[in-house]
Image (cartoon, rainbow, N blue to C red; front, side, top):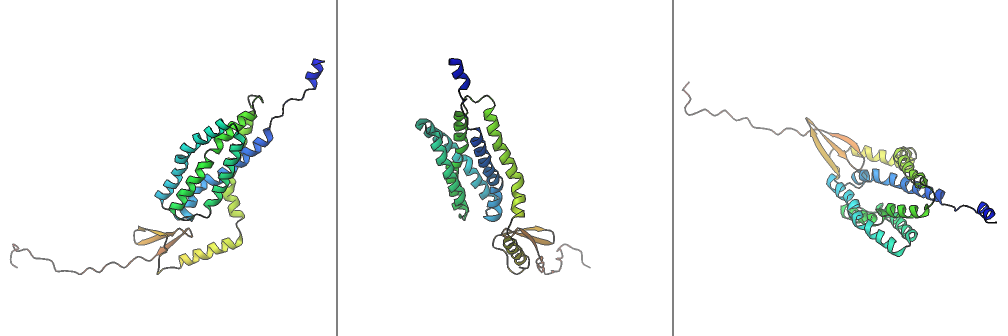
Length: 237
């Protein structure tokens, strides 16, 4: 009887497929955000290089405090899945809020608020995954975690191509009209433009349109020619 019971007993079901989908989707989102966030800050938000560096440095600095804090909350409460759900919802709200923030100070604060939740998602996800796959075999975690790497790789490789391919025609026409307006502007400068001098010409890069425009060089300053001074000790002619 015991042997018959052992044969008919169903093995424990491990949530390998749901966890694989979760890691794939989450890291796909990371592959869209992190590689291009600095470009967004520079080209779309109009921040300087120093300001971009400060905003990007906010993520690991806040994560150094947020990750141990959320880990303590998850371990002491024992509700790791609930903590993970709260962190993912907070991360989604933080990513959404960044689209409406303007200015250096607002972006720093918004990025810090995002980092308070987003930087702790992966450590808590690892804890939940290890607990769910306990007893599933030595290769179960690797099979689940590899889908996160695949999602990140696909997002980094395909997102620029998809963004360019499926950009609405109205947005493309608007961008082209803004580019023409920036190119044909010769009397006034773009408020967000920076100029570099290369020899006789001056180039200016308008951040709002990402278009290189050429300006006419300024007329050289008129220098009055003065007669050469004669030395007091020069011999008479």
